[in-house]
Image (cartoon, rainbow, N blue to C red; front, side, top):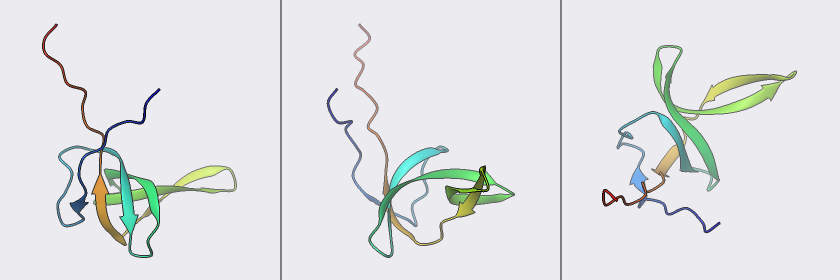
Length: 77
């Protein structure tokens, strides 16, 4: 399967249009996947950390840029 196409990079000050998983670049140069979502009354970037077998969301305030997947082209056929 070929690599998925991705959008251009957007600055962290530009919010994604919808909740979901995105590739992010952090202040320390790390590339990882993070979720843009509203959790615990706060909208922002979230990653999961497993603590004693339980997935615990943690806020990621150090995101510099993000990008998502490009939707496949459909021509109605």
